Image (tube, rainbow over all chains, first blue to last red; front, side, top):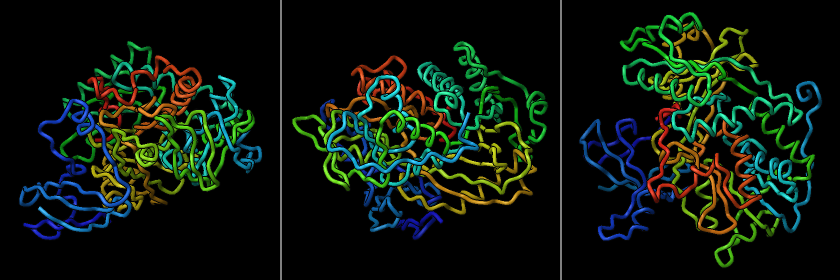
Length: 80
Length: 403
C-alpha cells in the first residue's frame, strides 16, 4: 500500500509525491579525506528507525526530514 | 542427469562444530556457491554455512531467474560472461537438473538515447565474444511476433533493440539445492535456522561468530547476505556502501508455452518471460527509498501489469497468481562489491542489487579463490569494496534493468 508522508506545508500526501533524499548525514565542512570518503559513500542502511530526507516535488518543493522505521515503513515524527 | 525425477536430496541436520576453517553467513546462492567451490576447487572442506531461515529464502528464491552476460563495462562483461559459461555446465557439475532454457533476450529501446546505448552494448559485447546484436523493429517483430511495436500506442514506440541470443532462464531453487547438496557431499556443513547474532573481532581480526547455537570459532568469516549485508557487516563494525531497496515481481497462472523469448524494455523498466512451469513472470524496477519491508504493493501490481500489457497485449487476458518482494543490496555504481574489509579475516560479497542471481557461479568461484589464496582473482579484483576511495567506480546502471 505504500505510505503517506506528513508534509508540514501540504499535509498528508502519498510518498509518490516525494523524491527520496537518503538517510540524513552530517555535513562537516572541514572533514578529512577519509571522513569525506565515509560520508560520501558509506551508509548505515539502518534496519529500524532512520532519519531521512524527502523532497516534495509535486507540492511545496521543500525538503523535509522524517523518521521512518525501515522494517515496516511506520513514520515516527516529522520536522522541517 | 538427475534431480528432476529423483527424490530431492535433503540437507542433513548436523550439530555445528566448535570451529570451522571458513564460516559463510547466508545460505543463498552466493554463500552456498562460495562454500561449494572452497571444497571442490581448493580442498577446504571444514566449512560451515549459517542460514537464519531456510536455504534460498532470500534474494535467490525471489529473483526472476534470467541469465545473461550483456553488460556494458569491460570488467562486468568479463565477469558475467564467466558466470554465464559456468552456469551452462553447472547441471553436469552439480549432478542436478537446473532446467536451463535458452530463450534469447531483447532489450527494447523506445528513445534515441536508449537506442544509442543498445548499439554500444552490442558492439562492446561483440568485442568480448558475446553474442549480442543490434536489431531494428522489423527484426524484433520477426523474432517475437507477440510484441506490440507501438508499445501500447502511448507515444513511445519501439525504435530498435539489442538482442542477446544466449539469454536464458533457469530453475532458481534448483541452483540453491544443487549447490547445497554438492557442497554437503564434499563435507561442508549447511545449517538452516541458525542465525548469526555476532561476529567476534579480536585485535582487528575476525576470529569467530556468535549464533543461536552458541559461539563458533573461524579462520575466515564471509558474509553473503545480500539485502541484509549492512546489518551483518555492522556486527563486525564495518560500514558498507550499500542501501537496501525492495524489488517486486509477480507471476500469472500457468499457461501453455506461448512466449519463447525474454522481453525486457530498457526505457519502460519491465521484463517478462515464461517460466518452465508456464507462468508468465513479470518484474520491474526497485523502489527508490531504502526499506527492509517485504510487503507487496498494489501500485506496483497495477503499474507493472500495465507495462506488460503495453508490450505484450496478450497478457491482458492472463490472471495473476501471486506477487512477492525481495530486498536488494544496491551499490552506488550498480556493480557488485566483493573482497576484504578493514577487519582482517572478514570478507564480504554483496552489492548484488538486481543482478546477483546470474552472478552466483562466478561470484562463488572468485570468493572461494580469494579466501583460499588470500589474493583476489583478476575477474573480481576490480569489484573490491573500497574502490570508491580512489575513484574506481564501475558505473553500469544501464545493465541493471532498474533506476
